[in-house]
Each structure stands twice: as C-alpha cells, then as structure tokens.
Length: 114
Length: 117
Image (tube, rainbow over all chains, first blue to last red):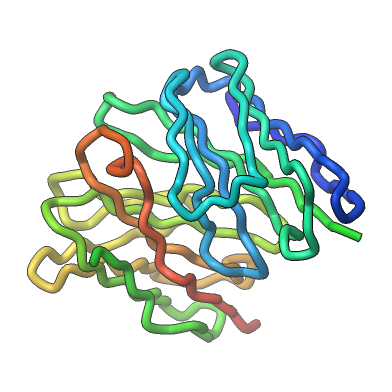
C-alpha cells in the first residue's frame, strides 16, 4: 500500500545533540511537509517542499532545518535540540494541482530531549 | 485573519447515539475543508473533505460532514457512535489556490471525543 513512513517512531536525544528525523513516501506526491505537535495541540507547520522549492514558515526557529534529496525522502534536522523541542514530529505529503490537495500523514516520530 | 473554530474542547456521547463535532471557519473565498482524526500517539488520519458539489460529504468509518456556506460551518457527524471512535478530531481548511502559503492548512484546536459504553 502507498504510504508515508517515518523513522524512527521514537527518538531520544540529549540536550544540544543534533538529531535527524526521516520521512519517506511511496505516494509520488510533489509536496512534503513537516509539522511539530505538542500534547494534543493542533499541529504547527514548520516548513514544506514543493518539489525542490523550500518554503519556510516565518516563525520556525533557525534550529530547524530540512533537506529533500529526492521526491521520496525528506529529512528534519534539529541542530541543537532544547527541552522545548520535545514533541511529536509529523510528516505529511500531498499532490498539488490535481484538485484534491489532501495531506496524508505519517505515524509521527516522538522526540524526547534529555 | 483566517481562522478555524472548534467550539467544544470535549464531546461526550453514549455508544449507539448520534454524534456531532462542530467546526466553523473564517476564511476568504471558497476553501477546501477537511476533517482528520488522531488516535493516541499516532499520526493524523484523513477522514473526509469538501471540495465542491453536494453539501453532505461521506467519509471513512461511517463519518459524514455537512457543509453550510451561509453559516461557514462544516460539522462532522456520525449516526451511531462506537467506543472505538474515541479520539481527537481536527477540522482544517485551506485556500484553493496552489502557491506558497496558500497550501498551508489552517487548523482548529481539536475536539476530544469520548464515546462511553
């Protein structure tokens, strides 16, 4: 089945130690999104890629970076995690231009910062 | 400012009873409207969407939603609730135009649904 895959499902890191979360998709969607979600709040968009075009949200801290080496994969890099970065990180994809534009989410990676 | 309101933090219903989770929006134009469900420690699952056409949209797991343009509402409904429907429900809207921030979903704060046996 076509899907959005996130690895790992749980990640524990130390304060200040860089961490990378990964997302892959078999849907062949042209847009990939990264969200941060804290304790049952609404997800907060960090940034998204439309093909190779990177779109950052104005309030996303510089500590958060992203890479999209190809259509299928997208990475979220947290350069120096702080305690406040502990959250669920959600990856989503969509195919723009088809009239559907539905975002499909992966299962998420829960990040714990010690 | 564009916004989505889910006026109830929590909805409690008895199993077998009909349920409604409310959503109203304040967005210019004719947006796309979505409902997502989230089970504990899981990602968001797409339930249904309104694009155009019939105001009653049917989705996954027996859910449906009614679009009301004059009231700018998109309430989620199910005729007979199950205990397994207990989860967090999010309403979201986005602009129809495909450019930059127009792709961004505007989210409600979520409604926790508890279905009691």
